[in-house]
Image (cartoon, rainbow, N blue to C red; front, top):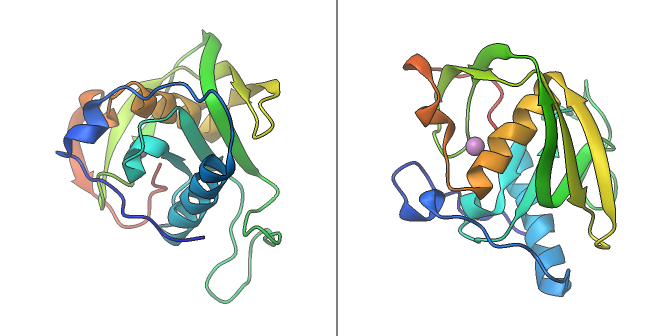
Length: 176
Ligand code: NI
């Protein structure tokens, strides 16, 4: 496992559409491991493959509690370095969406900033797991927001296009 370089706003790859994954091979599994390590290393709650320069429809997320640097206050991590709330979405597709929710949002590709974004309050997403078995998640709250944010990344869109008002400097908001 390795921390990969996160591409930042202005990098052309973040504007490109990701391609569907056809087969989960060793290379894809390594990419997913690296994406989790990269996301946790930056205290993010979500990361799309394009953010580490790979144009594949893969998202990793973890909106659960996290251990701090002293190993206190959060969920223990398993042998693969992930918590029980870790989620992988391969080829995700949002099937249903409802309501609206406005909140501050950040992105690991726009470090140190956040902005107010209105999203759907709840979404149903269908995706494939690492065995290419389909599953669905009915999400609300931060998870619903994160799914929409990361699916936008897979379509080459950044949250800054949706920000109402100005981006603000920020040190503590969750980064997606
Ligand atoms: Ni992002």
